[in-house]
Structures are given as structure tokens and as C-alpha cells.
Image 1 (cartoon, one colour):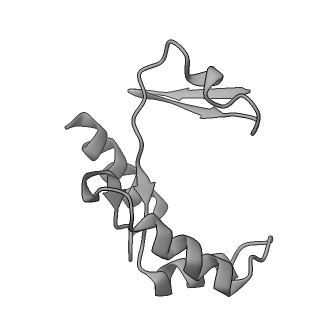
Image 2 (cartoon, helix red, strand yellow; image 1 turned 45 degrees about the vertical axis):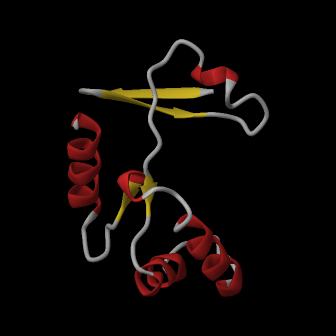
Length: 92
């Protein structure tokens, strides 16, 4: 497990096995970063690791199953703007 702290929040990178145990004792909330499908596909095409477009579409559709209050539409936002949106939402 790797931890990185910033003012107001902690980012934890957990190994797949035991991720729930890594949250023990921490206050945590779920946030689903969900830009438009077009934006998601564009961003994915710029990554070194290429994921099949059909899998991206499937996962994007499934992400809409999360309640709207935990979904963040970051379409057209920079990384800094997306982070500001996330932090603002977490303060609510």
C-alpha cells in the first residue's frame, strides 16, 4: 500500500487483494470521475496502455449506475480543474 497526503485528503494506492482492509480506520467516500464517453475515449487514446474501446464503452455505461451525487462530470476540465471539483464535492 502506498499513501500520499495533500491538504485535506489522503490518496491511497492499494494492492488488489486486501483493499478494503487498507481503509480500516480511515474516513472515506466514493467519487466516480465520469466525463462524457467521447472525452473518455479521447483521454484513453492518449495513454500508453491501450484499452479496447468496447471495454471502455461498457465500463462507462456501468459507471452510470452509481448515484448522481458521487459522479463527477469532468468533461472539458483540466486535471487541476477536475481536482478542484472533486475537493469541492468532498467538502459538502
